[in-house]
Length: 181
Image (cartoon, rainbow, N blue to C red; front, top):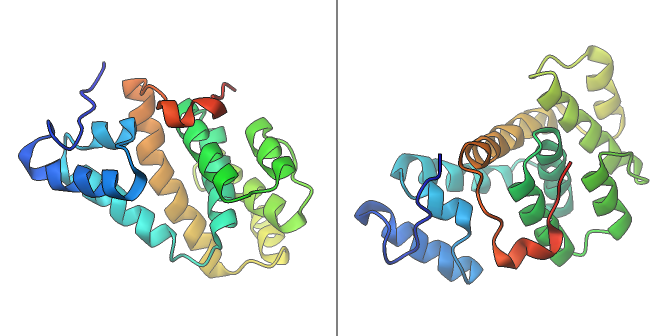
C-alpha cells in the first residue's frame, strides 16, 4: 500500500501547521513526515518521542548510533539513509558510520556496546540476557540508558514499520546514503 506523502500545503487541516514547522526546521518535509501527517496523533507522538529521546541521556552521536543500530536490525532502507545523512552532518567518524551501516563492530568500545545492546533489544524483542545488559553497563552506561535505548527503539519502530508498509521513497536530500542490507 502506498500512503499519500503530504506537504505543508496539501496536508489534512489538523497537520498542516505541524508540517510547516517541520519544513521550517529542516528546510523540506521529509517523505516520512509527509506520510505521518495523515494522522495527527501519530505525527505528534513521533515528534514528541524524538524530543524525549534527545533528553534520554545520550549525546547526539550516541543517539544516532542507537538509531542506526535499530534501523539496521529492522532493515529500514529509508531510515538508514536519513540517519546516515544526519550522522555525516554531525561529523560522526566515517569508520563508525560504516560499521553501523554494515552491522559490524565499532572500534570505539563504548559506541560498540551501545550498538550491540540496541541490536540485541530489537532482535530479541527486549528479551536481552543478563550478560548483554551487564556488558552495556560495564561500557559506562546506566539503568537510565537502558530505558533510553528502549525509548529510542520504540521511536524507530514507528518509523521503520511505517516505512516498510509504505515503501517510503528516500528523499533526494538523503539519496547520497542509500542503503540495502
